[in-house]
Image (cartoon, rainbow, N blue to C red; front, side):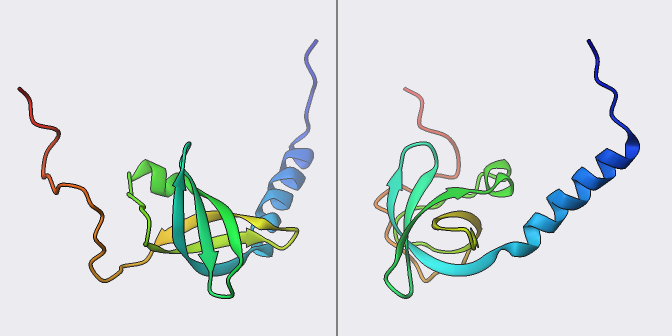
Length: 108
């Protein structure tokens, strides 16, 4: 059984989804811990620690985020314990304890 949807209801849905993006709070924080599933513990300037995940653009362009990086995040005013990482700020050189390679792992 198919359900018919009018163009007006689609426009209302799209306008509601776009309006939801205006209600975000932008904050900066420092990565404290890297968790599985591209999740991170981030400490804000006021000492509050939040759980954050990577936005789709950072996943798409394979931006690496590690402990010690400073990031810009979006938070919902309704849940201040979770955030979405939208930008990794350029930092002074951070020791990441990993070898620097310009290509994949060495083949043996």
